[in-house]
Amino acid sequence: MKIGIVSNSATLYMPLLSALYHYKAKAGLMLYVGNSTAPDNSVPETVSYCNAAGIGLTFEHDKADLYTWLQQHDIVFFSGYSSIVKTQYLEQIPHGAYNIHFGALPQFRGPSPVFWQLRKGVQEIGLAIHKLTDQLDSGPVIWQQNIPNQPHYNYDNVHQLFGQLQIQGVLAILNGVNNGNRLPLIEQDESLAAYYARPELKDVFINWQEMEATEIIDTIQACNPWNMGAVALINGLELKILDASVGLTNNYSYPSGTIIINKRTFAVMCKGERLLNINFFKMHNNYIPGRFAGAYGFKSGQSFANSVPHLTYTTAETN
Image 1 (tube, one colour):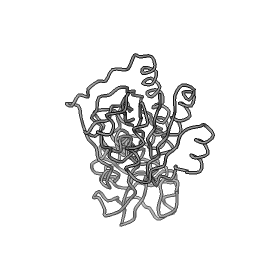
Image 2 (tube, helix red, strand yellow; image 1 turned 60 degrees about the vertical axis):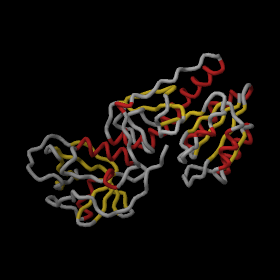
Image 3 (cartoon, rainbow, N blue to C red; image 1 turned 180 degrees about the vertical axis):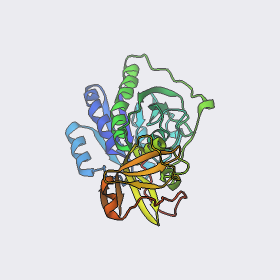
Image 4 (tube, rainbow, N blue to C red; image 1 turned 135 degrees about the horizontal axis):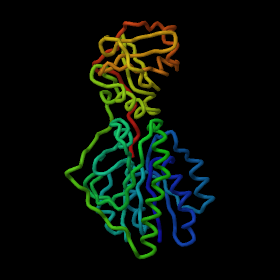
C-alpha cells in the first residue's frame, strides 16, 4: 500500500513521517510539500530526512503537480495543505483521501480552527479526520478526538499537540485498511455546523467594555505566538498583551478599560468589574513585564480604546 502525505508545514508532516516510518517495510511512504512561506519549512532538512529514510519527496512547482502525484497512491492524508483541491481527482485513490482538520467538526469548520477553539474558550478542543469532499470541512468523519482545554494552552503548543494526536488517527485508519476492517464514515450533523473565517483585526482586538477578563485571556492565548499577543490601543499606541491573569475581586468603580497601577501590578478594569492583571506585554520592539508599566509612562486613570483601530497584522497560519 502506497501512503501519501500532503502538507505545507514541517510542524505537521514531520511527526507523521516519523510515526509512519515503520510502515515502509510493507508500504511506500511519499511526501508532497505544497508551496508555503511558513518559517518552519526547511527544504534542506526535509530533503535530508526523506533521503535517509527512503521516503519519496515531491515539492510543488505547479498545482497540476498534485493531481498527477495523487494517482500514485492507495491512500492520501492532507495535513495543513491550504489550497483548494478538485475532488474529482481523488476518486481513483483506492482507499480514499482524507483531511486532518485541527478542529472539532462540524462545530469549527474553516481555515483557523485552533485559533477559534481557543478564542471561544471551549472546555474541550478537538481534531477530526474526514473524507475530502467538494464542501469545505463537510465530508464524513472517519476519526475524531477531543482533549480538555488547559489554561496554559496557546496557538503554538496546541498545534504541536495536534501534530502528535493526528498520528493516532492516521494509524487507526491504516490499521483498519490493512486488517480489512475499515473505520466507519460518520456524516456530520449539519444542525451543529459553524464556519469561522481567518481571524481579522476585530477578532484579536481587546474591547474592554464588551469583554470579560476570562474572554480576554482566551483571546491572548489564541493569539500567541503568531500575533505576538492580543491587540490593545491607548492614545494611539498599540500594545500586544502576551500574558495576563484575572485579578482579585476589587472595590473599584472605574469604567471598563481604565488602568490601575501600583508598584507590583499593571491592571485594567474589564466588563463585570473584574480586574485583569497584565503580566507581560510588547510595545514597539520591547517585551515588558507588567510591573514596569509605570516606568514606560502608564498611569492610573488612563483608559484603553474600545473601538477597533486601522492596524495591520499577520493572519494566523491555516490547517
